[in-house]
Length: 259
Image 1 (cartoon, one colour):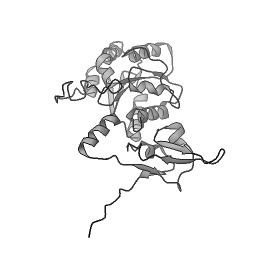
Image 2 (cartoon, rainbow, N blue to C red):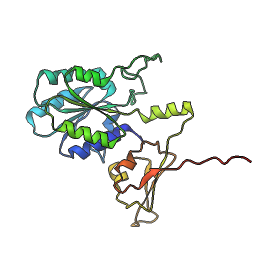
Image 3 (cartoon, helix red, strand yellow):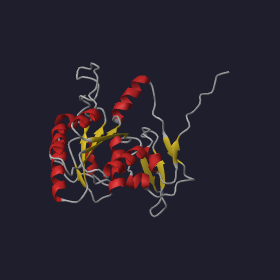
Image 4 (spheres, rainbow, N blue to C red):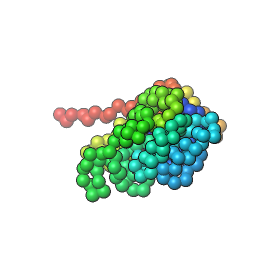
């Protein structure tokens, strides 16, 4: 979806590790990273299998191995293989936990990290970072919507050898949209400054947000890039990845006072 925290995380991982790493997939929304332009799921077997299989690959390959696992899958089947990484100390894959605060792909059911039960009762959330540390992993935490935080933490963890976990925190944008609707709050919108845009295609061909559209009036004509304001959910990541600073917020309309 537009504004998805997983897209931002995938983009940062590819910036740091390139295309030559092994990307271990798991069960959840992030399996959509299998598609172009990301192509970041080399296999997907069953819940939690990314970590165990990724661990095995590190034993026979010199390639970097990155295991993607969601918050729900982490709680369901991701903790035992992390304990196994620590138990069999040595070279281990990097685990990226894509924490979007909910079990999104199957209908937004809560999980132990959501802070709410299936009956809607508010409870203290189980903190993924604390659990991963207790299992012996070195842990970094980032906002999924900050490319700088993500890239800085990924670079630090890249040089480590033991069990490593990056928790990329960013609520599912559908969840945020629902909460905003209840509060009467609208997303901040972004637009492309046509005077600054160099038509490089980073926003569409590499970042690939579905709210950003490439327009051509005629075949062979230079494209124009446009953000559909009805689809923009204000994550801001497009403005961070644009190499020319051509994407910025739309100034909110001020209501004229009645005389």
